[in-house]
Amino acid sequence: MFYHICWGRRPCCFINAERSATLKEKILKLLKDSKNEFVSGQELSERLKVSRTAIWKYINVLKEEGYEIESVSRKGHMLISTPDILNHEEISEYLKTKYIGREIYYFDSINSTNTKAKELAYSIKTEGAVVIAEEQTSGRGRLGRNWSSPNKKGIWMSIILKPQIEPQDAAKITQVAAAAVWKAINQIGVKTQIKWPNDIVFNGKKVCGILTEMSGELNRLNYLVVGIGINANTTISEFPEEIRDMATSLKVETGKEIKRKELIALILNYFEELYNNFTKNRSIASSIKICRENSALIGKDVRLTLRGEEKEVKAMDINEDGELIVQDKDGNISKVISGEVSVRGLYGYV
Ligand code: BTN
Image (cartoon, rainbow, N blue to C red; front, side, top):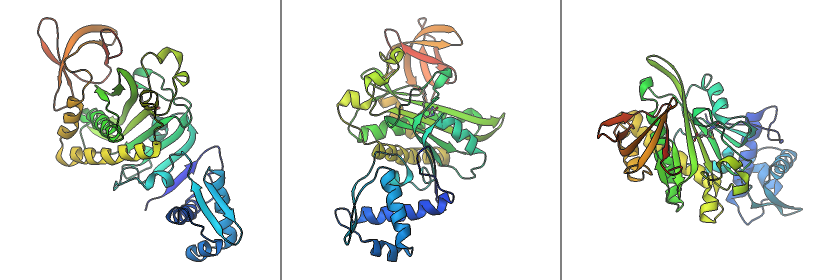
């Protein structure tokens, strides 16, 4: 059974969240199906087998959530516009997945979707549930960094996964996520590059970061949480000053407002396809191909920092296991595992 639970500061939370969400979803669906036409309260109540009072109640809830609905006596209700929000109702019409994103935990505001996903991961039996927030108050990045996540400006989400893989293969998921994000952004007409291991960049600046976290023992993986943060419609002034020279948003670079709900669904659609390849065939070849062909690093001299130690190397390739192949000044070739390493260009971020 798929269900949608909604927590938040605004009134999207009811005592019986599951039932009210279902009725609300059904009303919304009928209004969406009859776009540009009025649907009478009588018709809604007959079709959904609930009282007209209940219909009124949920029409008002939808209005409070930002749905513009024209209500005219003796005509009924007409959906004029939908809000720019990333809840289940708004995303599901674009989703083509079987299990990724079919269960959505949606928040107006939360500390971190990764932190919430880790809390939920123990009680959720299936995989593919997604935690989405409009705003994160303590968004987290790799290597203990902060991740700026202003309200409704980006995509801040975490996917909960339970693959039957060895813990040492967990890092490969970051390449799968990077490839999915690249494909989705490419489909909306923006050609980005992937900066191994976890960034998507545009014009040399970061538009997306991925934070993969896992829980497991030496030889057993309990769960994986793949956190994806995309600066979609952020303006320059909304970035903290200290990252303005290396961060940007899709809107800043293209001059166009990004339709977040379409983009998030595209990411989940591509993620499921690439993740299935990984779990079924034990291969991330399809993702690595995308990461290689669109790499921001391959062929460049870069600076690696690992536990305080810096090294200048040339990035040569990404191997089938998702490791970066580098060559040092003496011609020695080695593999770099993503783990704790930071990669920077010699003269800037890339
Ligand atoms: C990085 O580039 O360092 C990784 C950034 C990851 C940010 C995302 S936003 C959604 C999820 N929740 C978090 O707290 N972090 C990730």
